[in-house]
Image 1 (cartoon, helix red, strand yellow):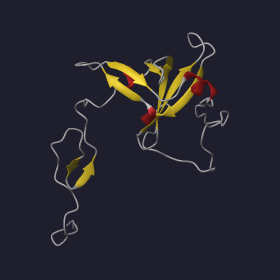
Image 2 (image 1 turned 90 degrees about the vertical axis):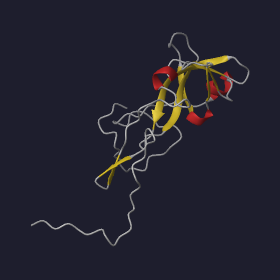
Image 3 (image 1 turned 120 degrees about the vertical axis):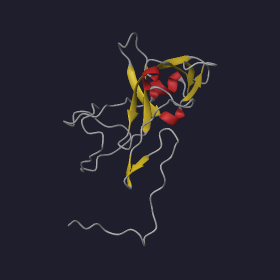
Length: 160
């Protein structure tokens, strides 16, 4: 015979399943991640961000988004903007905090109208070059220091 702990005397700590799209679903009392069924109007597709032009406060094009950086918790941390160069030759990648981007959508469309930042082209040209993580340690990190500890995240197997 199997015995299971009794929960009759304990208050429930699990919320009822939500009908909200993207909300965590529960099954047999154990919380499991839900599924995102729809893109919300304030959400942006990464495939539409990469390659989009970025404009400075003077309304001049300062570069294009070449990549987005997602941290170990799944939060979009930065946008990598390619500045300078021609057709990618001589281009320098600079990462700016993602919340520094002001993204507007075309009216009644899913298409990005414009991405602006408070930085000028000169600011980005003077900014430190962004270095992608290399497991062999050959690249230098930008804006952080190594603690000598390793980390594991739930995105194991993802290409970085």
